Length: 91
Image 1 (spheres, rainbow, N blue to C red):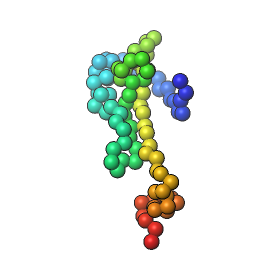
Image 2: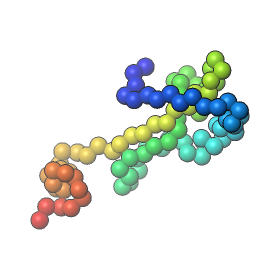
Image 3: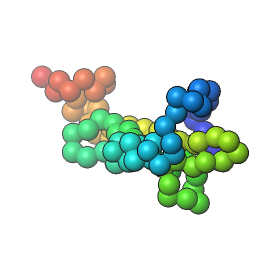
Image 4: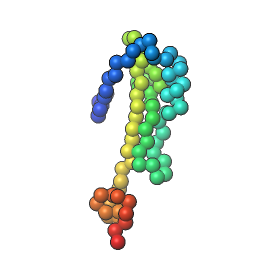
């Protein structure tokens, strides 16, 4: 698996919630694709491809994954809105 950007954060185990509680909280912010006028979308997704769980326990760790997807602008939109894509149509 290739990552564009990956970060590891060591946390204090005594201050972490249980995996079930953490999974319930992450489910409230689950990833959904860009809709309508959204420029990007982000949310939590399954950290491993073989399990749909949002929290994956492995070797004394809890693995979670945050996913972010940006909406791509089509080439025609740059002609309408200018090179910067600022949202102000050319006059």
